[in-house]
Length: 235
Image (cartoon, helix red, strand yellow):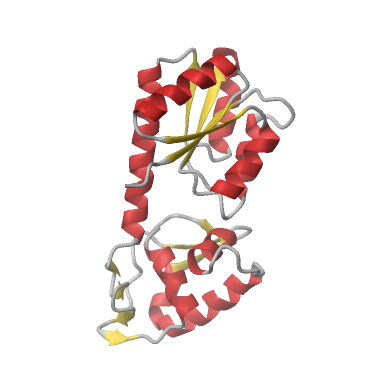
């Protein structure tokens, strides 16, 4: 069974040792680093399951690390728990606004920290399971991942592989605004060289094939697209 991988980023050696020891006791795989630049490099290379990120770091601080990772398609999905001293709580709130998932105030109880990490990992795995469901429905639109079929009002809809994956990603994240990079990562292999505008072209053809249901794919100006939480009636 694969061990969830945690990246711990903090420049306090004693704290890092304590956190690493206790996470490994709970059967997590742990990588540690002490500065923002290496944190960015490791996150992009290893794609950990979760990042524990200190706010105050040498060089690139935690806020900037968070901002960069959450703005990049390949790393935006990684949960980030920020570690902050009480005096830096306002910065932690800024981190949440930039996409961080949670923050823990120093000094913290190690059991609380491990519990928070475990909860975030479970939530992340649940979201992935949701995306891998066999059959997803949105109003009269039905997508079957195993059969690789899409039906609208009981009639088959012929989609290309990329259109199918884009639609599945949208349907698995109903009501959530997805950036073009997130949609690309959901539909195309991460190592493929692509252009953001490719998404617009594929969405346009997808909308055409979905007919009346196309209005459920909403354009988010300056970001990307989302599938409306409540399907618009097709009649």
